[in-house]
Image (cartoon, rainbow, N blue to C red; front, side):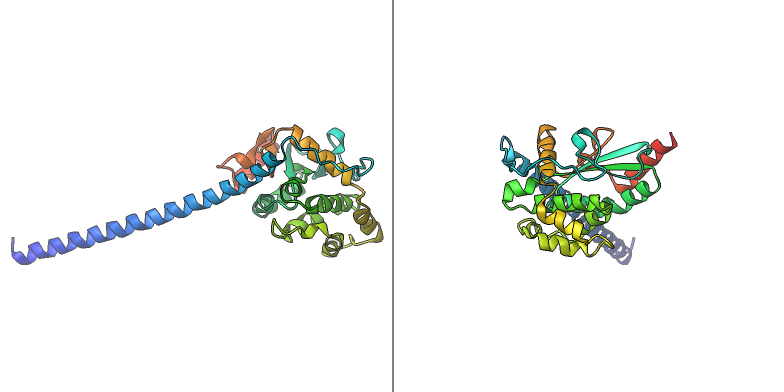
Length: 257
């Protein structure tokens, strides 16, 4: 073999080795990004779990008067606000806090799928509103916004207002939802909601005791944090393999029987 041919083969091998190293580096960066994203999700959930731990054994229930459930509330002690048809074969139970960033992340990712399935009569959703962040960081934004959402349920506008609250969620440390005027202002984004009856319900804290009772039920249930999302008794939010597409497949399979 000539020296020229040997040099040519050596150069080709070197180029191949360089390309392999570049590919390895690219794969490593991709794995790092995937792991990093997973850690952010886990840390976000861990922070919420910390909220529960910080509140363990505490009972800060205010003497807010009699428990007044919002119109149409169902389930044990009327603590669930239903969305979707009663005859749906699948029921999703969601425990949420309007100040909770992880709850907002869940809503952003899953909302289109939940709306689609509920509107098609394939999924019934039961929302339970709690105030974990208030207890951990102080303030009353979780309570005030949950009461306002219950007032929206009285007006038949719960789902739309629920979505508006999460779309306009302040930073976790910003107790902006403690301001009733802010909550009433956001009601203006839902057609027909900002009425004198809604404003009075918000300002009077009509459903405050109901929110407190839901919060107690959440603690008594031994759940790990918010959001807790149960399908058939299983917390699907804790399932690392769950996606909106997978949830849709499960619900549609159940609907087909």
